[in-house]
Amino acid sequence: MDIVKNTETIITNFTNLIDINKEYTNKELVNILNTIYNGVYKTRKEPTKYNLFVKENMSKLKMTYPDLSRQDLMRKTGELWRETKNKSENEENTFDKDDNNTSDIQEKNFKKDANNTSEIEDDVPVKKTVKKKK
Image (cartoon, rainbow, N blue to C red; front, top):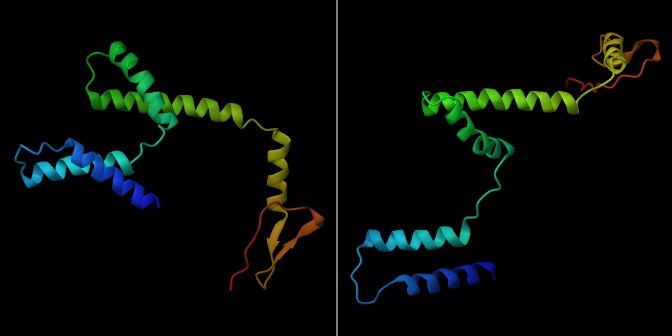
């Protein structure tokens, strides 16, 4: 039913926009129809965090570096984005050093036997999953 409703909307909008007394070229009619179609079917995506970051910081960077080209400004924005992203990731991913050392030890205690099956030495639990080769 959605298709029928959308088609009805497109036709209604198209007939409302067309002036009966004017002659249109095929290209003009196609442009009008495409505009209406895109308005009905295409919805805008939500901007990503990066899009919002660029929008907020581009004008600031233009004021700070007025001599830079657009390409160089985008390069600066990318560098600034990476710095901010890395800082926020480091804050979110703080972990105890003991946890990291434990996984290193567990990896060292893991070995494969001759039949390509996995064994664990000294009954140390391993977090990794090993797939058998066929």
